[in-house]
Image (cartoon, rainbow, N blue to C red; front, side, top):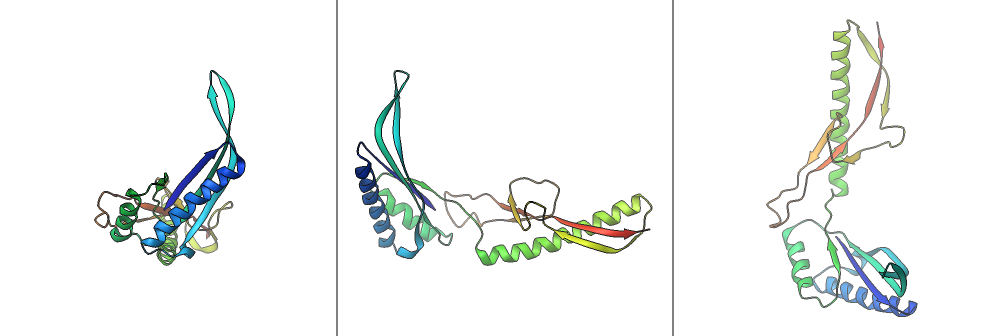
Length: 195
């Protein structure tokens, strides 16, 4: 989950101080509903000139300090309900964004499964191509995992013809939330000796 807060003030230091007050309030609200300080992290912090446009002119309007607070937690109705209930009463202005991803252990299991699927897929396609072209496959000479620019499992949103694993989040867990499927792909290149 990401919470974005900002504060605008004509004075640089006051824009930061105001942002710090909002950040402390958000942190206290999260701690109040059971989250530990150590799990509440700043993902982004910046201060920039605040420019507004009036009569086709850019006017300096002080400084805008922005902070993005990140909190990772198990995806369940209890946690999300606690957060939404708590922040529905908040006097601090903020933007709230939920992102869904696999836990590290589930991601590791998915990666093992997808490597097996990608290898099986590469072998089946090689057998089909060799059969169609009357060439015999002798043995696998070389295996390349990943791609030149990215070795390892990739998250992607569409089917591009490679082995894939779709991890579906149980939609019944969270009423009002229907997370999309998380799709990962792998590239396995098999080089064969042929005759």
